[in-house]
Length: 594
Image (cartoon, rainbow, N blue to C red; front, side, top):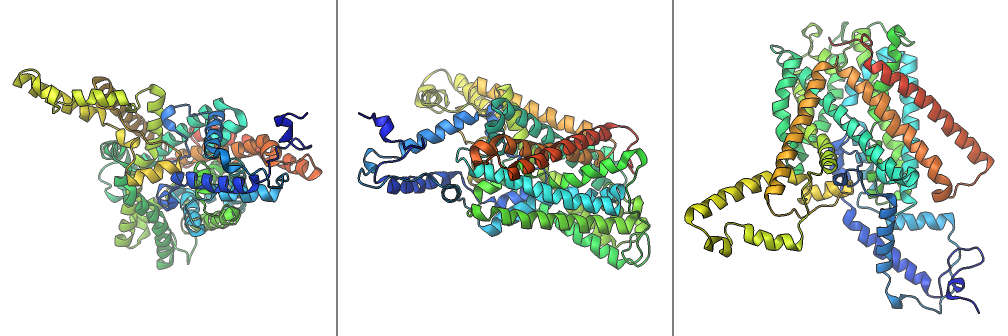
């Protein structure tokens, strides 16, 4: 007599459902797809969070170390089971066959279909890849030479495009995966999630430093009366309030700042065509070189400057997750990375032809040089648009860093419970019970205390509580909004701690920006360290670890050849990453500040 357990399993060991289960499973997929819809959003907004992104794809940063992959899987499994009614299974339907690879792909497409159309997904992908890294692309060509620079742009475009596809395939293989951190924890366990969070925080801090340097340099070109370092110090007082603003306040300016980079490219072309004599002319190019700059191993810095433009992999899973048609994601990534590579080549080539080896670490500096004789009005407009970038993006990029640090330090806002509701009703100075107790002076003191405590409690709370815009942003990064606890002295103390922490982080970014030699060193570090890890090394490591179990990759000669190729790329990338990171901190390398 067979057991119930054995009756539901075929000879292959794969669970087979009773008759009627086919319709039940199809209904389950549809129901789960609807359930997933609440985690979707219009990622067209994300095009305003480009460059190093915001994003940086962090999962539940309030929890500091994040939730484990096993926990996420368990939640998804319990939710799926709860959606199956006891009477859904029809005992009379034929047994299901073992799903084929094509069936699995179709099922994943049905489950993972998000809100963004192909056009929106393409726009978001391109927006992530085109950012302030383009400002230093001419210098990258100066370091790497025509041959090396072009080869590296093409190679990095192809490699990062491929690793982006690998992340998407892993994401689609399991509905419980929602972010870069989830994939890392699935591959290497919960500790990997913590390490990835630390890596993202390091990257975000470095990008904040780059934005501070960019602000100081740009303002110095607009108002040269003050030094760049002075403008960086003044910039602290300008960008600090943005770290406390709700996301919706920064949305429109952030989109404009992304457009500013695109406008700058057009103005570079206009300047080069407008001027007929060197330097600064496309009609009469400056002397250039085919080979790399071997002085102080500057060609290594060129690698980081080029790769810094492809540092959007932290949000690739969010873009892929939100794609309405996941079957088209490979094609869309091919287009977006090709466009990004073409823009990088055009920007680098124009700047290098116009300025030669005298090009600055930010091409915008050369555009404002009076010796060039460019039209002042149009170049001032372009530079003021560049100034807008750090003013808006600093608050956006520092947001996930603050949330992660606050979760780690235990100063994130508490979530309201039913008991808190009862306490808050009494604690309010306008409640009947509070009004009935004490003298007028006591009631007035309670009101003042309540107002102060409420104000302190609300510090930084907007990063955790969604408005209509923030709901879309948080869904993209798989954060959960909270209902904040009522204002108490303890929560007020947390608010003070959050304010102090954000001030300290902003001060630290400003001090580092003033100490560092220049914009090129910050961008080279972001490219050589962060981008190599996040865009090449880790995605390949995730794939090698998870592909056999999650994607069903067999041990065939073709698979072994592919695996060998991946290992070669891993080794080469690791060597270049270490060389480039060391180069970024060696005094005397690069061109230095102008």
